[in-house]
Length: 219
Image (cartoon, rainbow, N blue to C red; front, side, top):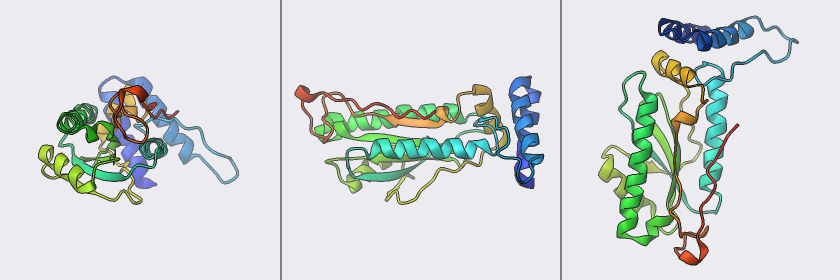
C-alpha cells in the first residue's frame, strides 16, 4: 500500500507539473478515499482512471477478459504473442498506436500471400513493461506459422500458449499521467485487428457470407 501511495503521488505531481489539475485532483481524491477507509465503511469512492495505481488494475483486467472472449468466440485456436514496444516514458499511447498498425500490416501482407490468413484476428494490450500481450486467433493457420510470420517483423517476438497470461498494470509515472490526461480508460492501450471482410465465423473465405465480428467494448 505504501508503494501504491508513493506511485500515486508521483503521477499527481507529474499531472500538476503540466497543468492538468482536474486529473490530478481525481487521482488525489481516490488516494485519500482509500487512505481514510475503515472496516465497515463499504467500498470507497474511486476515480476509475487508467492513471490510478488502484483503479488501473480493474480496468485492464476487464479489457483483457473482453479481448480474450472476443478472440476465442468461434472456438478457433488462440496463441499468445509477446511483442516488443520499445517506447519512451510518456509515449505509451503512441507506441500502442504504432503496434496496432503494424499488426494489421503483418496480417494483411500474409493474407495477400495466402487466403487462410484473411480470418486471422488479433487482440491485446500494450503494457508498461515494454511489451504488448497480443492474442492471435488463427483458424486454418498453425501456431508455428504465426510465430514465423510475426518474427519477420519483430525478431524478438515470443509465441506460445496463452494459458493464464495477464497484462502488467505497473506503469511509470509518465505513462500513468499520459493515460490520466486522455481520460479514455485503458482503451488507448488496446490492440485489435478484426478479420477481413468476406470471412465466415468458421474462418472460411467466401463473399457470399461476408462477416465482421463486433469489436470488444468494455464499460
